[in-house]
Figure 1 (cartoon, rainbow over the protein chains, first blue to last red):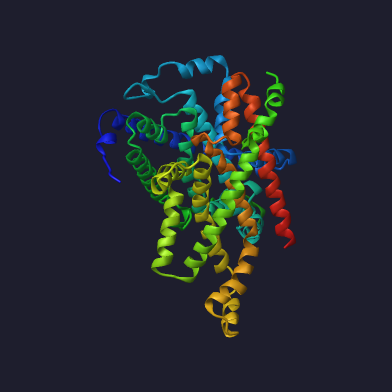
Figure 2 (figure 1 turned 90 degrees about the vertical axis):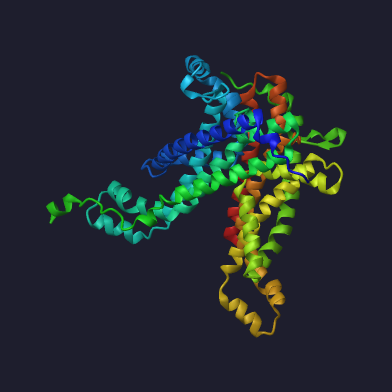
Length: 255
Length: 225
């Protein structure tokens, strides 16, 4: 087998790859931010007092865990997107000079919205489950000690249980965000111009399949490696001792 | 907007078993066939790899883990591309898309099976190994008759989870136009144009019943033990 890199590292294919890298990176970042926000929402539903809210969270979790992400992306793109108000869709389809990549590639597009949203929601469901597992691993004594110190239920959760849960679940949570980056390759199915889409485009353009696949593989490995390292720097276990929680004032009053 | 069931009813047989009458299974049936074949192959590949990694610390174990991490580090879609591209080049003849998908999924999932198997063997109490050795068993006998049966029983829930992921992963056969459930749903959507919500909700419901049902079954069996 002979490698001929000029077929992908010059001219149009090189430009396509650059566009692909930026698109993959941006959809990963936006999808991850959405995932973090949706995790907060799902987690509050899960920890809510009302039974109906907890049931809603369980329903959402089961639904999105037991269907393929590809089908979810197809649903958001072909089905749900068209239910958005007309005005929103017109705005999305307008020209946005601030979100246009070289070569006149629009970054803000129905494909981008459907991909970032689909990936974000799917990932949020899994991250929530990881954090719940982390919460379950905190010993019950922690919660009892906090409550007996006069912490409210919310303070106990916020300052005692969640920091430990996050610390317990940190590695698997990082794994889920890395998975989001890899899963963004599926957005090629709805025509998002990310790395996988560009690799297939090069293959049909000049048949340099071997080089194009190798370049794509290396790009995902490299992005994953850098992203993994960067996320592990945020590991709360590395920043111990934890910042002291505020003193529960009520206790002093009571004593 | 109303849900129009006619588009589902009119294409139901195509979504469920494709062109079965012409001898080409498709739809949900092909999804099941792909999952089962890839599932069996990934166990056949992953368990021996796990045994090897567990019993041969050092370079062999490191190479196996390096290999597994490499596969897990790239998107599954690229594993499919590589198999689709390399297997015909190695064999010197065309390989049907469905076989490429089975091989790629088996390869991808075997890495996870290997990890689970090693973890399952590590989790057994040390006394099991020592007792087997003390009774005069060879390393191979101890693995085959004492450790592996216990590890595999404990690993059942983990394998059920992997199989559920595998069913969902068969949807990537879409990329090679292999007519499993997601591909035929896409075809029906392209043909009818007007009913994407109905078609993809129904498709999702089929996957949900299959995967959610299996998850329930897995929980039930792991409680019985």
